[in-house]
Image 1: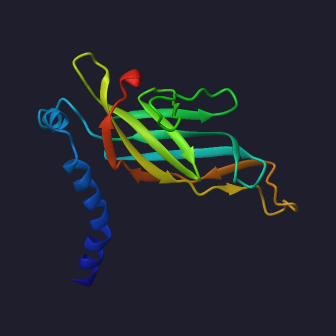
Image 2: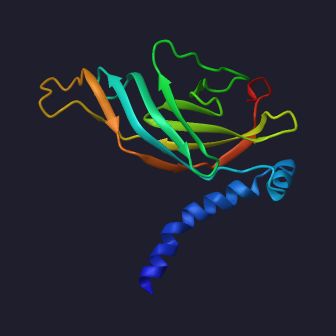
Image 3: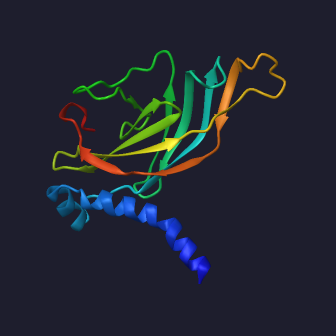
Length: 175
């Protein structure tokens, strides 16, 4: 009995987050979901995160990773390097598109915010975007790095996180 209670208590935050996520749906989006014309993402996986850093992962010069949303079927590679062009719109934090432009990302303070465009309207373009944040715990260099500068590679294991918000796509970025 105690094990069941422990499992329920562990699951409560995720269930509450999803309930809050669903409760905040705009009426038009809720109608799309109810008629199966819109598939809302629930969680995503960041895989094979690798990066280049000169300061033990505090600052990343370049990185790449895989993004997968099993529910919507979006699977793509994402990159950041010196030639990456951000999408800046309406005073929002700059975002970087992945190879599949339905997925975008923001990297800040060892956290990767993933944004997925969902629910195409009559024009075929996404009307909404879901967002969620994954904490990326980097491991850099090797134990023989005497000066602890990690002049090279960093990596992280696979991380699964939940989408926790949904909002209309800014008009200039629908895809």
